[in-house]
Image 1 (tube, one colour):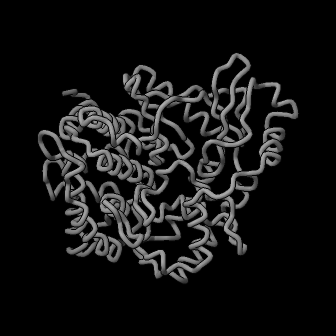
Image 2 (cartoon, rainbow, N blue to C red):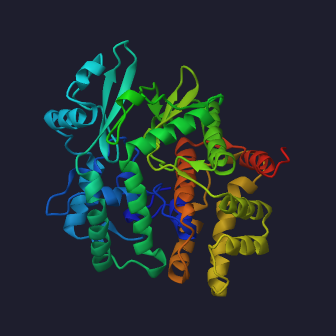
Image 3 (spheres, rainbow, N blue to C red):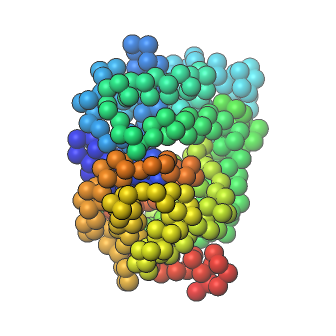
Length: 425
């Protein structure tokens, strides 16, 4: 599933081409975000500030070779990739004092000043409540929220000059949407609200759970949640096949529940946001900063595009794609055919009977072959809501491929499709 030379991965790239930036793409160093230690906003020198963060958020979902980038952008991206330099302890303590008050240490039973992980715009520390309850406290890097607008503008200007972006990428609009998402991620109060919503929605779920937000320790720039046990999804390849199959099946179920039942997406596909606890056979979800809701009108049309792909109904794929505003009706025949073919290919897992073996699938080369036509001939930008949805789907597909999962995708789809329209299977 790799995308050698920094190009888009098969699922990730064509999902972008169909509508929305896909963070679930591979780069030369591996899956973006898979290490759980990304440091995009620490600055890259040369006056570029936090452009590494914008590149990280973009998921580098543009079909260009990193070698084509100017040295400043390459350095910013590499710095983001390597997770260089945490905040000094003194700076961390100043942020905590500003947010929680000068007596913040008295609110805790313990606090480790050295962070154990990094988030996209902050770093995470182990701590404990006075009663011993273990916590993870996320502290935002100073100045991140103020710099987003200029960082996005810098990235866009440099990419336009140096990378030769195709018109069908609609880079201006894509980066504006990215800027909005980054602003959401800077609002830890919003993230806390999304985490509470997901915790409630998944309260009775037998597999997924969400840690409790500690309200009295959470502010605009500090987020405290109970520390969850488990290992990141990327480290689950050693599990027995039957467990990997179950994990992947649950990931696909979660995607469809978020799309069709909750109409609320946790859209960051970073594999470090999924912690599997083998002792309980449970998975904890983390990082709700980029969560977004979906309009019912959007999901009504989108689920019928999926239905058409499952049924192999090319005419309906085309018709419902127009209803969804992926297409205008004025595209060339070549563009329409490429779009329909891509939708059908992406629907193959859900159309197949029995178990779909993500580890053995070979659709990525066919998907990549369609991307140039999709980017070259697209007349309108895709729907804004597809940005998060396609990032979510690409991340799930890539995770299933990474784990070599075998999933009854058709059964999963039919179950949730029936529930959506009120006639459960």
